[in-house]
Amino acid sequence: MQLSLQAVTSKNRDELTALRTAPGQEGYIESVEQCLAEADCRSEWRPVGIYDSGLLVGFAMYGYFQEYKPSGRLWLDRLLIDAHFQGKGYGSAALALLVQTLRQEYPGRDIYLSVYPENVVARGMYQRFGFLPTSEKDTKGEDVFVFPIPQA
Image 1 (cartoon, rainbow, N blue to C red):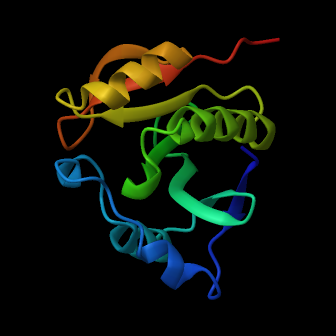
Image 2 (image 1 turned 45 degrees about the vertical axis):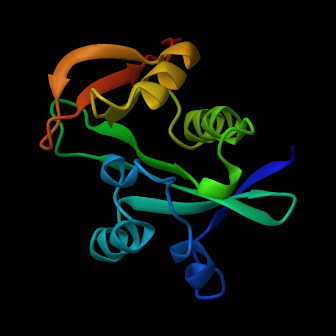
């Protein structure tokens, strides 16, 4: 597996919008179209395609938001592995690459994400990776998790 993250461009946008969740997962994440529309309206979002040796396998979106007081928050807000590639280790590998990327791009920042309580597969993956539940809920009722970055 040779994963890389590539920015969304006019050349890969249509390919990205063809990504789909597996049946039964539709309510757990917004469609790529919805994510890209949100990113088009808010410059803090960084949407990326997840590629394995040039083959598109997924999508992610992250960003740093100042409005979270006192010092802002870094959110890994979307992670989608296409239905055709689920169950092959891409989710865990993509999460590791995303965390590594976020640690480089935003040094010293804890990483936040949210997940629906009934999405037990995603919750398990995040917790195995080291994300810790907080007592917070986001605006959609999702549980908020944090990956604490050790402070130097």
